Image 1 (cartoon, one colour):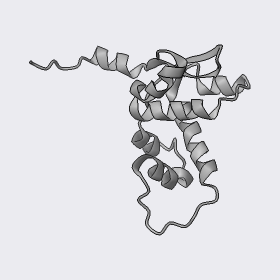
Image 2 (tube, rainbow, N blue to C red):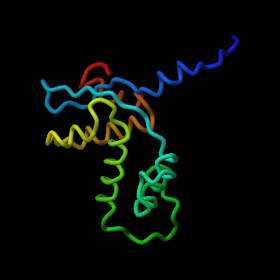
Image 3 (cartoon, rainbow, N blue to C red):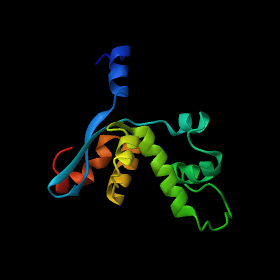
Length: 135
């Protein structure tokens, strides 16, 4: 089989994101959004992830590489800060800012689903298919 070069138009379409079903707010209140997968490396380079969170982000995305690191009592808060940054970069429609401005509080499953999507794409949300329906 001869492989075809991916066209610029196809790349642009991939970059637009995917329509995904996130964990629902309740059984009769689905949450469907358009998400894209941001690059952690690009986010670190362009300052989207503040320097104060780079160590936490490194541990989160690449495993704990810091030997003899001191316990961090703020680890959960820093983790949430990083997940919020990922949400801000991942949500295309609605945007994360629109969700927050509307006073909508996402639940933990939704935050984790967005994080999982940013790392592995739509297949990472397959664990929700059984309870949520098709993504």
